[in-house]
Image (cartoon, rainbow, N blue to C red):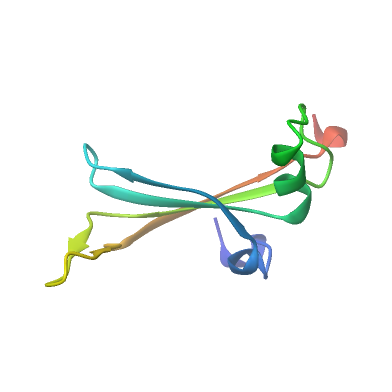
Length: 87
């Protein structure tokens, strides 16, 4: 996905989850816009139109001398936008 297809402010959205895939040696952070976060908090399914999530994936993690786990090389970004008109 090209950067111009990503919402410009996604890095300022709330973090929904962080996962560490030890088997695949990757780290993932999922961000959600305000609509998505509210829908998750309220258990609202299906998600409302305009709800957006972005998952950023990095490769094999590195551990620094203090034991902090750092992301490795950037792998990809995945975007989900709820738009009932496109279904």
